[in-house]
Length: 88
Image 1 (cartoon, rainbow, N blue to C red):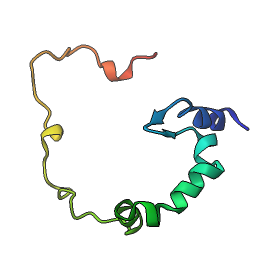
Image 2 (image 1 turned 120 degrees about the vertical axis):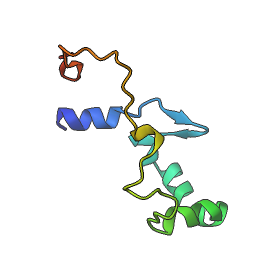
Image 3 (image 1 turned 180 degrees about the vertical axis):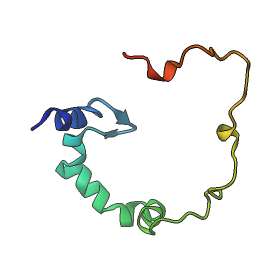
Image 4 (image 1 turned 90 degrees about the horizontal axis):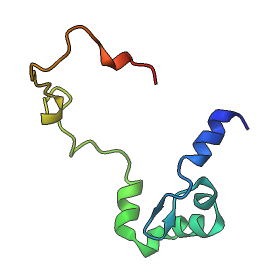
């Protein structure tokens, strides 16, 4: 396994939401895969949402400017330095 794959598998180690452990090993385990397969009967609302395909009905139009798209000029920008390029 190369280094990037190792980082990918470690990314969610220890990440738990409710009773779900989101690590790769757990999500591909029998118990979790069985639970996902049974979602059709145990949680039909989630199953429908998950399997209905991609719907963009609730998304804004791509040309619409949203609040997070607006860049405010605070007058505090450093004109001499571009900090988007600082090495770590």
